[in-house]
Image (cartoon, rainbow, N blue to C red; front, side):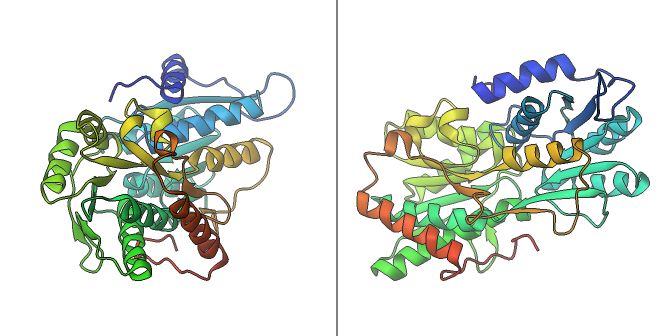
Length: 354
């Protein structure tokens, strides 16, 4: 997991300097030296997960660049039991905006927000009943659909795979879209590409039950490779690095599709990453914090929903695979993106944000 990247290193440096420091006494945005404090609590994946925690921190860094009155810091949760403690710590420190990262933090955020109705919270990948929590959600089924179509068009074995960290909506939504993208390719091309690791109809598949341990990710993907998969999409945070690393070491025997944040910018395994199903978490977080710091009220309903039409989700560049993806396949994916954005092709998942 300790792979150097511009995003992660920047986050670690700033985080190390800020983590644990009490915010300035006056945290309200305004004139003079008054500051607006934005404080982030990671889930157990940690700040260096090359995934949604890293992306959310980048959003706070961008907010600070946009408005130098914004102070940022984070605390990394080591276990789920830390969520309430860390959120409460920031309430007690009188942070102006408290950001919870990840669907696993939903219950803890709801509880602490309910107990502190005048405190502004934000949460990535979840929506809770409390109106003082601004939800930032992403319809990654749409971008996952494009990734599945791409994988089906690129496979040489006729089998592609995917697996998750845990069977929770922010994970299975990727897998649903991926499976449907493969099915759409099969229907369009009269092909029979097989998906292993996820059965959308049964909502059952392969999971590491962890978002950190790379050996667990490698173990699951090894099983999918044994079933014939030559392209695998891990949706397991840092655990997925076990798959990208092994794919890179395989010398092309199989390749991967990363998720959340461009894997070619956040990992050392670009040679084995065809593309990334991106969630534009940085822009969503930046926009929310900058608005709040400027005194705008953040409405919990509808909150923010990223999709293909507003560039909240999408596919990253093909990077080292740019010359390997056929021009015809690229054009078909571009057309699919336009059709999904226009509503002429519908992508559905039980895990889509409501």
